[in-house]
Structures are given as structure tokens and as C-alpha cells.
Length: 149
Image 1 (tube, rainbow, N blue to C red):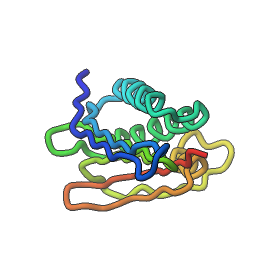
Image 2 (cartoon, one colour; image 1 turned 60 degrees about the vertical axis):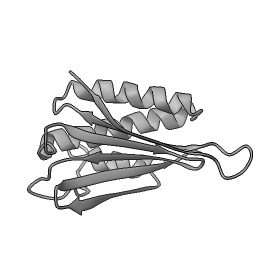
Image 3 (cartoon, one colour; image 1 turned 180 degrees about the vertical axis):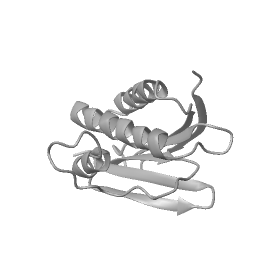
Image 4 (cartoon, rainbow, N blue to C red; image 1 turned 30 degrees about the vertical axis):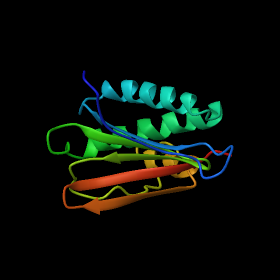
């Protein structure tokens, strides 16, 4: 399983003591086994940026849910795989998963307590301060934004 880093961007802090903003993007293989590797990559980057363990744990869950949904319901991006993007700044951690599109857009499902599945985006909504879907010509991007405080 090969994960390819496809983008790195760093912006210096505006004021003394500000953390720098950092964005990383990877192409993740279109296989369930790649979700574990993605969580590891995200964990390492978040620790390197001094993110609190509670936020790291929540981010790992969001990454798992977004990648899992894309693997289950979407097509791979052109060239194969899924694109995972992580943006870290002073106030937020933003997770994005881009796919090659799907028959329907991701939506929140309100399942009753005995349902086996369908809770992924409810979990994402609960753990993030904002989440959403952007449609594009090449596919969809589902994102979640977590607060660092």
C-alpha cells in the first residue's frame, strides 16, 4: 500500500508566538486497509504541530469516518485513490476527503438505536464545529473542521 504525499504548504504565523499554518495532502489507496495508514499520518502531523491529544483523537475518528464513507459510497479520483487533506492553523484542524464522485451526495441520516450503520456523518457532525460537502466537476470533497481549544 503506497500513500503518496501530493502537497505541502506552510505559512508563518502573523505575530510573535503564533503557530504557523500547515497544509498536507496525500493520495490514499482506494482500499479499507489504507484508513489505518491515513490515521497514522494524521496523528504524526498533529503531534508535530502541538495539537492536544483530545483533538488528535477526534480528528482520527473524523478521518476514519470520511474515508470509510468515500470507500463505501464513492468512486476513486482520477488516477485512483482518495485525496486526504489536512489543514492546521492556530484555531482549527480541517480534514478533507476528496473522491471521484458518487451517485448521491453525502447526507445526514437519522437512524434509530438498533440500526447497524448510517451514523458516520452524525459522528462527524458531533465532533466538528462545521462540516459539509463541496461538489466539483471531478468529484466531491467532504470536510470537517475541528476547534483546537
